[in-house]
Every structure is written in C-alpha cells, then in structure tokens.
Image 1: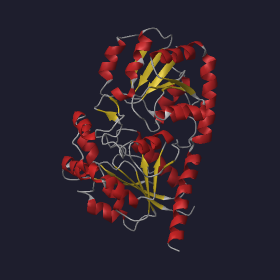
Image 2: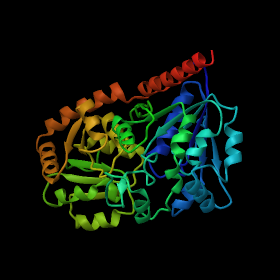
Image 3: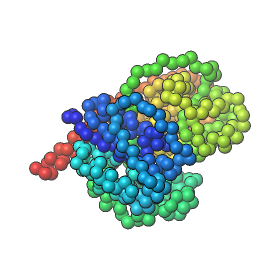
Image 4: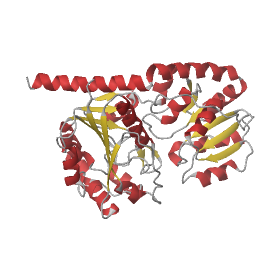
Length: 407
C-alpha cells in the first residue's frame, strides 16, 4: 500500500500506561513504521496522572520513528473529570482539532475514555477507525464487572459506578455514543467474544475482528532456568478480577508442581497471605520481557483465570509464541482461543481446574502436544504479518467505498 500518514489516538501510552492497550498501540505503531508509514501517537497524560499513585519513570527510548505528542493540562484532575462527565474533549479540544484536521490519511482511535470520550470521533479528518480494547463503549467501568464484585448480566450503570467509586456519566443516557459513532468508518476489536458482548449490551454498530499480534523479532538467548521443579506460570497484574485467588488454594492443597507468579498489584498482599508461605508458590514481582520469555518457555502451562470479560490477553500470545499451552477459565475469549488453536484446556469450577492442573503436571506429554498446537496456531492466526494484512485490507475497503460514494 502507498505510504500513509496515520494518527493513533488514545488515553494511555507508555510510560503513562496501566495495561495492555498502551503496549498494543506501541506495537502497532512499530509495525506500521516498518512498512513505510508515518505514525503519530497522540495521547492524554492527565488520565494517568489522575489515576496513578506515582508519576511514571520517563525512560529515554531509542529513536524508533514514532512521533509521540503528549497532551497535558494545568490540572490533570479537572481535565480528566471534564471529559469523563461530558463525553467530549474539553481542555485539549483546540489542540486535538489542530493536530487531527487535514494532517492524516487515517485516524485510529483506541482507548478514548479520558482523551475525549465519544465526542472525539467528530474531531479531525481522514478515514476513521476505532479499536475497542475493553468494553468501555457499553460499560463505564470498562470491564463489565458489576458493583466491583461480579460479572454484569443486566445493566444498572449508575448504581454500579457509584458502588465502584466512579462518578456517574449521565451523558451515556443521551445517545451520544450512537450519534458520534456516525463519524467512524469501522469499529474493530480483537476477539469475536468481545464483539458479541458489545452487541449483547447494546452497541449496535458492526465490529470487525482484527487479530492481536506480537512483533516479529529474533528469539532471545535463553538462560538456564533457575527453578528445577516443574511449574505453572501466572503473568499479569495482581488484581481481584484476574482470578489468581482461585488458583493459589490448589497449590496449597497439594498440586505436585510449583506456581510462579510474575507481576505486581494492589491485591498482592492478600494473595501472599492466602499462599500461607507455601514453598511451592513463588512471587517473582515484575519481570522484563527477556525474563518472561524464558519463564513462558519453561512452564508446563500459563494460567489465565480472569473473572471478568477479557478482550484478548497479551499473555496468551506470549505463551503461544514459546510453544506453551494455557489453562483458562471458560469465559470471554478463551473458549474461542482454545477452539481455534487446541492450545490448552478450559475450566469452570474448582474440580475441572484441579483436573487440568493434575493431568498437565502428571502427564507432560499432554502439555507438550498442546504446546505444539499453540505455536502452530500463533503462526497461523496472530503474527505481525497476519494482523497487518487484515488492517490494510480494512483501510482499502473503506477507501474504495468512499470513492464509489463520491463518484
């Protein structure tokens, strides 16, 4: 495709970043640049500075070709609250208009919750795409985790956000999302289950599944593993919704393997208490990617027990790339992933979890065979080239439709 000028617009971007959406956006930017396109990331810092306990460590990065424009207001709290309450750009509206008008062929929105809400879709010119990394379009708390304690089955958003400690968003009852959605050419997400959830909870626009991916890169030189005993791996934020509290008792009660936990978070102290100092449970803290790749490669399986609806967890691809299967809760995208790949096993209660952990630990050939399927599926469905082919196919389809429409 001819070289394009592409804007990636989002609230969170490294190092002003909490979860996987910011990492995905940087990965997307690098993949686009590698194919000869010009990329600017335009993101808000106020949301992160309002929500985070500490300012991020600003690390000087190598020149990777990404132009990053960070939006910062005089008051991070007032700036974020303005967008959260109105659903429109406030403090940064003029700056966004100047940056996004007549400068790009494609504007690709991501997490817009605090950079401009749905009102930002009307700002700027060019082909407009939106990727839903969470369920924010249908859920003000992003995760369909009702009242901070259970899966949402029926919406009662105002009482839910109050119980969850968030200010209500009255604009959601005005149809603003549906009206502003007219400005977007294509809505995208990373799994069919996420698209189905959006439709089930009232988002009427079609959503196209564009596969998640990892950047093509050389395999690292692995160090000899320090842990000689067979182990299962959990990698991610230590939060209630990640479901690790359902995993730890299994290892306290006698699974004949270790549980290694890579990550940190506000639920860590409770999880440590739950483990009771068991020698087969080890908390490793945050690990860099080279360390994680070795941990993934040598694990029996990676555990993904999330209690809420994920969209497509990055850890699945990281495990599959190393030929390691997953043991996942029968929820959200995991049935879809297992069906496509054969690279793991699902559980839905304590008994089926115990059965999966026991069979994997006692019969290594099960994990080995599923790991081979996981690696094959990764190469077939979730590589950089596969994702970019779909991405540019969508852009070409929109271009063609606009040409036909305008003669």
